[in-house]
Image (spheres, rainbow, N blue to C red):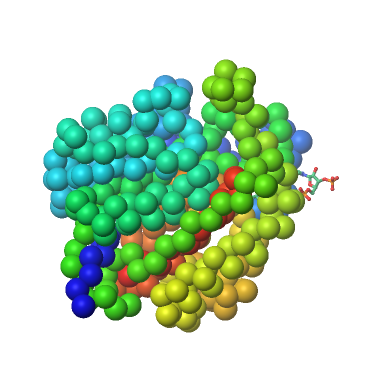
Length: 326
Ligand code: UT7
């Protein structure tokens, strides 16, 4: 039976030029390259320049994804930007991306906020819109400037994050309704707001009239991460009738090497199948998955027909997963 699937037509990414190494951070904080590498797997992070905004990062990544997709910007019907660091409280930063890329006037463009799970949530939302119509083509972006909400005096958080952006272009295409179809096969989005004080920003327009700084109980987040992530992946696999050993590439949100290797081990996914960018990018929140997807496609690992598994967990708590036949 013919069904509509959201097929990935193009992927793109952008990282700011400036790189800050662990050693550079150690010069101004009571930390060390050894501690950061051993506890997290991070070696360096990219940081946006003064005057370089989330929209600039998102536009650069989107431009590359659009060119590679071969789709004209005037044919995009919906733009979803996953971010927790918008340029302004409003309008949505997605509106800036829409205008700067020449995406058709009248296309829907909005921001989606699910912190580190933002890209999975945005992908699931776009997939739902494309499959139910009338939308045909979507630009889904993850872009962040977490450097602007970090307390650079707090060694327990500031060493973990970086700035960056990634984007994918999706197109609704008729497929056969089987697991061999190209496109998004299954998605899941979950939130449990009882844990919202474990990872949060201590400001906002309605509370403090400031943008605030990121605060995290790292140990508590870690404790929940592997269980929640492996649980949602198992649900996604069962729902689609696929097994973990059919996965070609595991593209997780890049928060901590111990979390992603622990999840892979629990699911029986070999380490060689994990696409890891954490060492060079650190945690870029909603941008980390599309940045890793771009890496896998550019270096030739992810190819047409491969089964790709995405997952994320972050503030809220939010968590989710997606299975894509590339
Ligand atoms: O993407 C959103 C989701 N976020 C995450 O997934 C983050 C999840 N959590 C983690 O990745 C880890 O919990 C961290 C990397 C944040 C921390 O690793 P940990 O092994 O859980 O360390 P810890 O918090 O238990 O701290 C161990 C020690 C502490 O010292 P004491 O109390 O044992 O004396 C910390 O003060 O390490 C100390 N510490 C540091 N030392 C050097 C904390 N940060 C640093 C640092 N440099 N940057």
